[in-house]
Length: 591
Image (cartoon, rainbow, N blue to C red):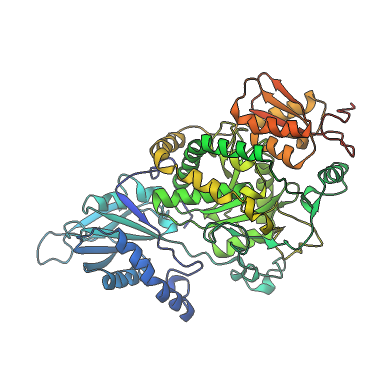
C-alpha cells in the first residue's frame, strides 16, 4: 500500500486524548514473519520487549485493572508479544485482539461471541481502496486503557480523524495509547541479486560505518546526534582566509576543500553573544516549537531528523528536544554533509535508506538565505534517486527561520539573530564545516569534518541548547497554536529572497549571486569566514545587528543603511578579491 502522510486534515499539532508512546523499536527489526523473521531477529525482539512494555506501563492509569492491546489486521505478532510482556509487567488483566476488515453481526446477548462492534474507515491506504474496518468486543469491555499498536504505514490522518479508530476507542475507554512500529522497508541492496544490479555500489550501505557520536566526536551527548561523517581531526586543513577566498574566486579550489581558521571571539564579542542569547531564547524556543509541531503534523508522526551540517545541527537537536518535551518522543537525529555545487553526501543517503524509511526523513537546516541549499538538495535527491533507484526522500527542508521565503516548513519568516550563527564550532559541538576533497574522501566514504577538542574551554554548544530548551514550557501553548494556524494557511514559497539577491548583485555590480549573502546568519558567516566587502543593513535595524556592527568594525568593513531591504542585513563578499584586501580597501568593481 502507498504511504499516506499526515496533512492538513490529519492530527492536530498538540493536545487530544490519545497519548503517543515511543517504543524505541530496534532499528531494522521486522515487525513479524510477514517479511521474514530469523532467530537473530527473535533474539533482538526478546531483548527489547521488557523496555518496550515498561514504556507502555508507565503511561497506563495507576488504577488500571483491565487493559486491551489492539493490533491492526495482519499486524498481530508484535502486539501479541507486547501484550504478553505487558501482562508480566503490570497487575492489570491484559487482553489482546486485532481489528479486521471482515464484517460480523454483533448481538448484545450474554451467550453470543461478538457482543459489540466499532466501525471506522480504513487508515492504511489499502491497495483495494477505502472501506470500513471493525473492532469487536471493545465497546462495553470495561477496559481502563486500550493500547493501539499500528505500523507507520497505518499512522495516517485517517487514523486520527474524528471518525477514525483512535476516536472510536477514546469514546469507550478513559485512556488510549498509540504505539507505532516502523514499517519494514528492505534495504536497497536486498531487493535484487547483486549481479542483477550492475549500477549498485560496490560497498553496500550496511558496510558503511556507524555514525560518529560524542564525546569521541563532538561535545554533544551521544543521543543528541549521530554524525554521518568521517573524522579528519588529525589532518591540517585550515588556510588563511585571504588565500582561501582568492582560490575560490579564481576557480582554483572549491570552498569545501579547506577550512577557515577558527575565529576566536573577543571578550566583548562573547558578551554580545550571551546578551543576544538571553534576549532571544524565548523567541527561538517558540520558533523551534512551531517548526517541530508542523513537521509532526504534516510530514511524519515519527520523523527521522537529518540536519545539514553544521548550521542545521543545533536546530535539529532543539527539535528533537521539543519532541521529547512535548510528545515524549525520542526521535532519531543525524547530521550529514551537503556541499554547494557538489550535492549531498550520497553515502549518507545510502546509510539512511538502509536503516530508516526514506519517507520519514526530514532534512533540517538553521535558516534560509537566498535558497541556494534548498535548490542544491532538490537536485541532489533527484540525482540520487535516478542513480540508486531509492525513492522516498523528500528534499523539502525544515528550517528555524525562512526570511527568504524559500520553504514551506519553518518556525518563523522573520530575519533576526539566531545566536548559533554568531560563532563557529564553539556553538556547534566543536565540529568544523564539512570537507569534501578527493584525496581524503573516497567514493565509499562519508564526507569529513574535524573535531576541535582543543577548544573545549571556549565551548558554548550545550549552554546554547540548554538556554533555549529551558524556555519550552513558557512558549509551548503559543507555539502549538501558531503551528495549527500555519497548517491551514498557504505557505507556498515566494522566493522573494532570491529576487532580492539578484537585484542587489546587479545594483552593486557584483554579477555573482554566490557573493551576496542575505540575512543575519549569512552576514555573520561572511564576517567570520570570508573576505567581506560591505554590509547592507535595513534602516533602523536594532540590537539584532549589534554583533554584526562589532565584527564589521573589527575588520574595517563599512555598514551601509538601506531603505526597503527585505532582510535585516545582507553581507557582500569582496567581488574582485586581491591578496591583502580586507573589505573596502580593495577596488570594488570593474564593470
